[in-house]
Length: 255
Figure 1: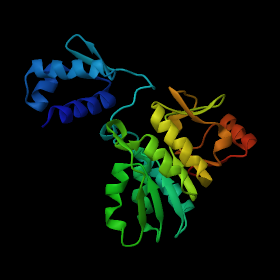
Figure 2 (figure 1 turned 90 degrees about the vertical axis):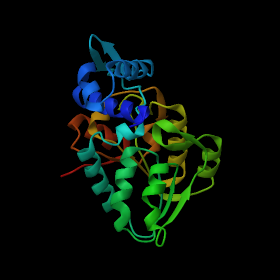
Figure 3 (figure 1 turned 180 degrees about the vertical axis):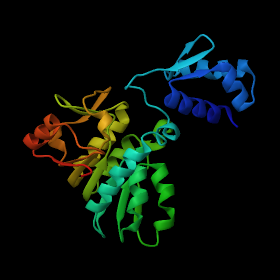
């Protein structure tokens, strides 16, 4: 196992259990305790962990941008519910934009039952996932600079490509949804790309699990006037439902 793979595995364990112990990790990964301490030091320097006596605890901070290979294993059931609902909203032959989120990957796996889709994305993971659909789908990659944290293509080239198309639906995610301000991401380049994706679409869908409601993050993606629909994994509070109704936003959740 490569060092980066081991650190990602430790980070997954931290996310699930909130703390890890050096001696236990040493046995699990068959490396010295000194190697594990260096791994934990790297995770602490990256802001993901806080070292403690004999181990480390997770750094509970909504503004951290965790690696994609870690995030894709979070909230799997919730993402599946969102993917199921969005699949029911997409018609054969539509043109879509999907962002480079782990939620979008779950969505595109469900969309494979649809015919003749045109899909634009900046997600490397989605491009790989749809490779077996090219006899029926048209898949366009944005190009851009590869960003490790999201396996995403970002930057000026990505923006130029996104601005040159108009689609039926844009489906994006967010790290936080705050009633007073809008919806947010932890990364400025991701936020800029998502904002451009929304401008390219007639129907603008925010796909976000309910744990993100009532939170804020580092950089703003957009205002509630920038979206037409919210899809989430469970029924929001009456307060949130009333707010979406006032904003003229359709809120879709499992019944």
